[in-house]
Image 1 (cartoon, rainbow, N blue to C red):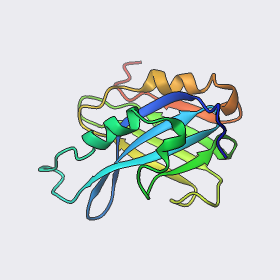
Image 2 (tube, rainbow, N blue to C red):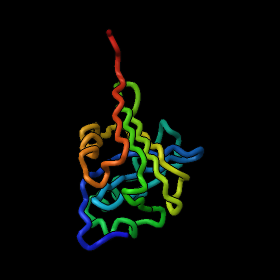
Image 3 (cartoon, one colour):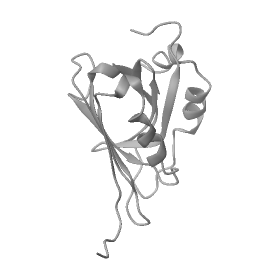
Image 4 (cartoon, one colour):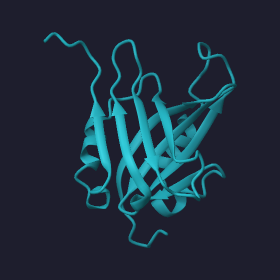
Length: 154
């Protein structure tokens, strides 16, 4: 339940959810009360030929207040911060895209206990944004993890 004083604290941008026949584009907004998952587009084209169909709605999410976010699309939903159990970011490399896993225990949210997203091509690294979530009072009981991919020389 949002309040009139709800404030955004982080935005995780340019994420995709791969489906068997399509690619969904998602933006995530973390407020001091909840995580809002915003559907911003879908592409049914081949993975190699697809265009980022989320640009227009991504800008709309950026310009919206937290109270407006869930109403932008019927697929948008929110999860109260107290229901979030874990946030795990696996950073991308030159050859592999970043992966974001969010786990929750909230019966009203879709996707049965969590969501796994992959960074869209050209997405900015967001490890600093995710790391900052560990310091947020509303997420103090949430396991926030960043796994950095790369070569280990030792």
